[in-house]
Length: 432
DNA sequence: ATGGGTCAG
DNA sequence: CTTTCTGACCCAT
Image (cartoon, rainbow, N blue to C red; front, side, top):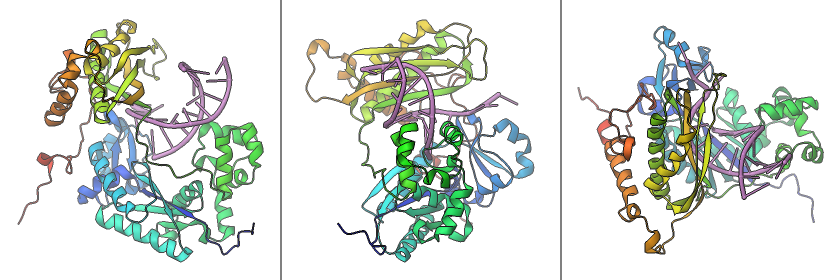
């Protein structure tokens, strides 16, 4: 065994992510937003979840409630938009497709982030990073930053650095930075800035005197494993340059699907809850069908607001399904098992269902005795099709189908058009 | 096994 | 007047 020579080039990982993704996606299709403060709001237009740099400069915090912002929006020239997930999904797909051309080894990590396996001399890696950044900006219209390092954890850290320090021009190759500068950075930043460390772990690490990233990177991995977990130990090793978190294959199947939402107006009756559960039952059916899956278990749950300590209630039921199914009638009926646990008069702020124990739809014909007539007539597909063509709420089982929307539906008063996925919402260009 | 806790984006 | 929603995984029981 020869010692790895310092000249030897280790495999590198590039981490690419879009700057303030939702706001940038909105800008990509409405250039008039360029240079203006923009916030994208959470479901129900509750709070700001993404802010353009101009909005951040105004002091608008992450999670700031819209009702506090609204009075000053005009004076600021602030543009607020409801979350438009169709648009973001479409922009995301374009970014990922483009990145895929630069490496055969692409892991789509989230809607706006990807890891790429890359190799080459440091100068080449920097050029590659700049090339990808420019290509995404030019072809999709959104800004990205790139961090490149020997491990995923360091690549994410390098990316964060690139984003905050203009000197990098959006691309940071960790190993190209002088060691003294890297240590200075790690000494400045709290462990909470590291991927995989949040508030709880931060508290526990601080209690041991481990406050900065530098502290953590110098900790003994075995001690960390014993006092925390192998997960935190991997983080330490990755900070030290030893790759422990592998690139992952694209996940084909999911282990579970969740349909859950906070309500614009609380639900106070079992009748109202019945409607909601019916909608979720159908959504679950459609999604299962889309992925060619059936569920064996359905869990339905509801909950009061965490803001109201009075009259709290968190009912949930777990229903084993008699056979694996994606049938909307069976799923909806199972979800209704929650209804007896709903207390009239209590304000439920959210509800949802979760389907688990998923398996691929078998191609073997079920015994006629157990075959569900609705499945045979492809009602799930029909519902999905109608929903797609005429919008959610245009058709449904029982009380689920209500045009105009009952008052618990999500509030999205400031939705941008779905330019890229709906023909009737294409932007109009006026010729002079 | 499974339910609670933690984390991510 | 709010603190997304969805998913994974570790760990204790």
